[in-house]
Amino acid sequence: MRVRTALVGAIVAGVAVTQAGVAAAAPATGRHTPTRKAMEVAVRDGVPGVTATAVDRHGTWSATAGVGNLRTGAPRSTADRYRVGSITKTFVSTVLLQLEAEKRLSLDDTVDTWLPGVVHGNGNDGTRITIRQLLNHTSGIFNYTTDEDFVAAHFAKDGFFAHRYDTVTPQQIVAVALSHKPDFAPGTSWNYSNTNYVLAGMVIEKVTGRSYASQIRDRIIKPLHLHATSLPGTRATVPGPHSRAYSKLAETTTGPTYDVTALNPSMASSAGEMISDSADLDRFYSALLRGRLLPREQLKEMKTTVRIDGVPNGGYGLGLLEETLSCGVRVWGHDGGIHGSTSAAVTTADGRHSIAFNFNGDWTGNAEAVVEAEFCGTPPSRRAAPGAFQARS
Image 1 (cartoon, one colour):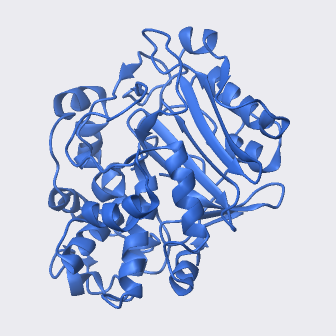
Image 2 (image 1 turned 90 degrees about the horizontal axis):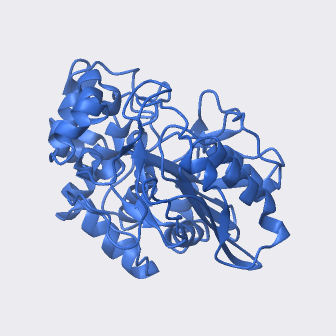
Image 3 (image 1 turned 90 degrees about the vertical axis):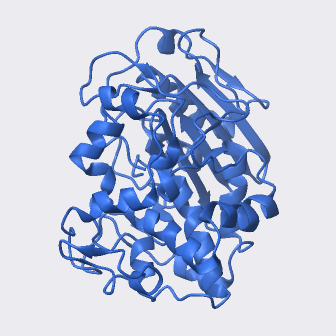
């Protein structure tokens, strides 16, 4: 899901700033001092609270900044579970690559091979779009979360409160996207489209005869013991320990802040419905990059990137972002945004240094600064340079 393109809000004043102290779950170390400062800057810039966990050769480090509840002032927890939005995409892509390794499909199969007649009309043609093009966002299919009516119904204040518990089916989502002409001919350009991964989830179900959620649970969550990770489907609540999630639900930089913790995530579907925590995300991306989930050939395919406009040092693979940071370190991962939640999970190419973190607000905060701070040790800046992990979700 990509929410921040439709929803831009103001800095949270008062409580978030006055409660901006950092609480560490492990003894403080100088290695992570820049990361802690970047988290504090995010809170000063208006993010209610931040939770992060990093893993490197020295062990695990976790910390929080700000608050998890604006009403009570309760701090965030390093054990917080949160909606991870488009980080879901890496899980979906991993399943499809596993199916390719098992010879059950080819990434060069057309969408129409598995979903006959589903993608058609207004110039959309599923016989010309491959599964690979869904996964690397070169299909040209319109992004349904930028449809004006969908935005009004699900992201704007009045629409959100009227429809926050509604169930939206994948078929309804695809119909919204196909009411628009394609952005470009398949394979000729790149544009981030959540519709691609709704269709990818539908392909998984057609190939396996089971839901994409069950495939992710059986193939990834259970083998890696990701106990905090779940696919809620239509369940509106966040299970286990969690903070509140906040949004402005408006296209302004001023106005009230709303608690949007409870919502039916079916409107995100296989593009962004998942819930996890920072420790689980570190474990997943580390395992993925170290070859525990995919054979070498499929991991190479996943890491074959196309250029992202406006991000000169980044690229998009198959559900996996790549970026060379200012210090020359090359990292892989994904970010994710959904109502009241902005997250990122990033790891080095060898999977030995990872960080995952979450802002419990969707309108402000420099995620790229946190990534740069962790891997490069650079002082955080409130000015976000264009980066692969800056709310592209």
